[in-house]
Length: 335
Image 1 (cartoon, rainbow, N blue to C red):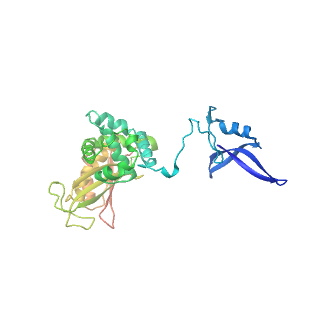
Image 2: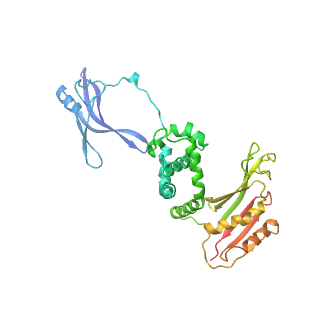
Image 3: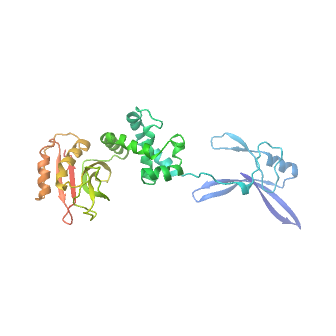
């Protein structure tokens, strides 16, 4: 809010009329709205208006704002006025806030803060492990990168330190890696928790499940990882050691479970393990008649064999794309 002078030449004489103006936000952007016209003001009237103006907010509460237009010198002895040397003003340690704040809000809306506090914070640490887990998850949402990149680049440039009340210099890549080790044993319970929250928030259905495989390779011998093996490479790098990753999603594309297999694991041999995961995690127990549709190939035979070991409340279908060897596993609840 400020006083706006309006100059008008009348009868060869310059007249100054004053109006009280405030800036408001509109759907089309910020706009200035005139609250009242004050007319011509003599020196005493202008001084009273410039001294204080009572402003009412939407709640009806009032407070006093100092109004000093650029053409008027503020009182030198006013304790509420601070003089600033504009050419000396500089920004220090600017940080990203919006994306981090949204990520933390989603983290809390999914109740993951309470989930990890109950399971990880029993082990006392300088930085609670539940907060380190929040940093890892929000980084994947805002700017996915390695743990080293989080420590050196992303984390110092964000407001996560203040949002999560983490002490300065307390987060490093070693702590991030140790947190990953603590998250792994909670994998199944975390998947079940997210599936339940996703269903509550969006009324999602998990009666139809889709399943497929991919692989990822590394350069080098990878001798310290016994799961790294040479096998069928979807990246056309048969010379590299690799892992096979299986992912299950619902028909809306929500991923709620994954498994990692040896790099030389045959695709058809993963079916039974993934069926067990799908049934235990997503399909309610209701008395139904089991059935399966085989495609007549090796994959269909594997589904038939695996379905005999499942509860009698599961219907399983498997399809193989004619263009490639990718698989589509569909587990349905039949009423």
